[in-house]
Image (cartoon, rainbow, N blue to C red; front, top):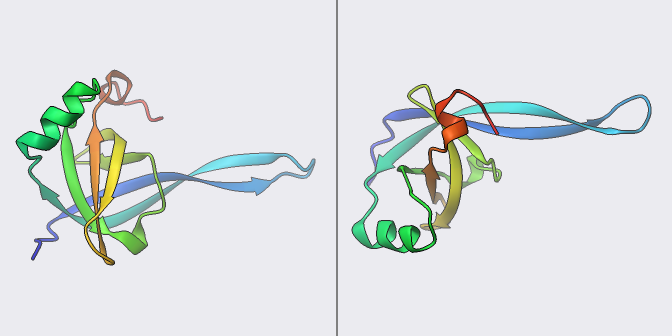
Length: 107
């Protein structure tokens, strides 16, 4: 059982066609409830071998996640490293904070 005690913002993109027929991307933000979990030692070690440094891991409802690549939590921006389905309803989302994320820039 998870404590759904943190609000995170999933930052994605939606596309629409302009009057010339060109596809334009527009950022979207969706606030969802999540449960923050500790990253286990094995996961951290495996990621380090691939030169990735996971910062945090959140569990979200899978129907709310649409392959967004940026998450904002506690005012900080993070890039999604990978996701892992726990079951039909829940998804683990592993994130890292890159230099550009730390400077307030979004991908």
